[in-house]
Length: 374
Image 1 (cartoon, rainbow, N blue to C red):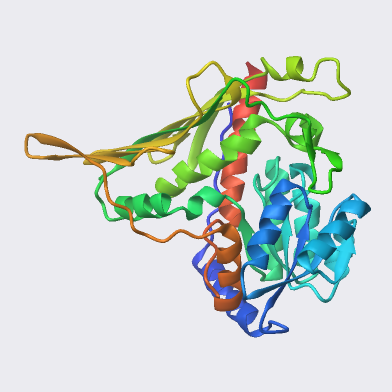
Image 2: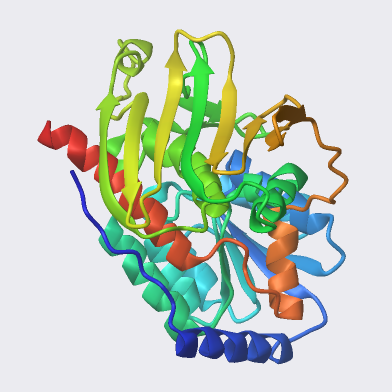
């Protein structure tokens, strides 16, 4: 069982953040944001493609531990520099902003190095995999005055933004419980290797290694917890409990030169100081019908269900009549990369903040610690 107190920015900290963002807008070295992508695996290539398609950006550097692949990516994206360490990126004066797309173990050192070097940072999820690390990152963000965004891409979807506004308008009344999950059926465990576009095989087994910050709680759990906490307005955590299971991963890598020592199915329960609670479940693979990403929000005046791939459902009552509505959602969506650039150029407040990342980290850490205590 883990008890925690959530970091909440004070009024003075909020004002300081506004002034820092204002300085950010006026301190750009050029009309375009000069971007570097650190880690050119599948996620990093996705970030680079997004920046390449944004006329407000220029990709000036790429970074990957494989020099061969870094050189290939440099040519592919028209970058000026190809580096093999994040320290080189941090030291490069031609870079204004970076995407950190490394295994979770390296999120803190890469992000902090770049923030301290005066660069804006978009860090892939999970923010990091320890509470102490998350708090160090949050402190680095505050002292740098630079934009910091966590890449929880689902937050930027039109359905999520619609539901957030619907809840904030008071349509659900008091939100007292929420249920969230990301369940994958058998056959979807994270494979140990992948291939770059040039055919080079690289390891992505960090998802399956404890020392690298892997595990389904960090990978899928950070996403769905971020979403449901967003709907609940990140209430203060009172108590966390849960169980983490490792049932199928070791069999997948048996006989190979890989380890699987993390959870592949994890569940948790969170109580908040305001009396609300939430239930969370995540699996890399289990005996279920289909992959499912859901958020169910329970309120005193209504409810909502977001089941990825299915129409959103809103539940309410008028008199003695109970209704289910499938709303028409016409809000535009965006990407973390486009939003990141908006924050840099226009002073837009980041939608996913470091302080929110600390709270998600506290909860996942609490679930793991609770399982170990049991």
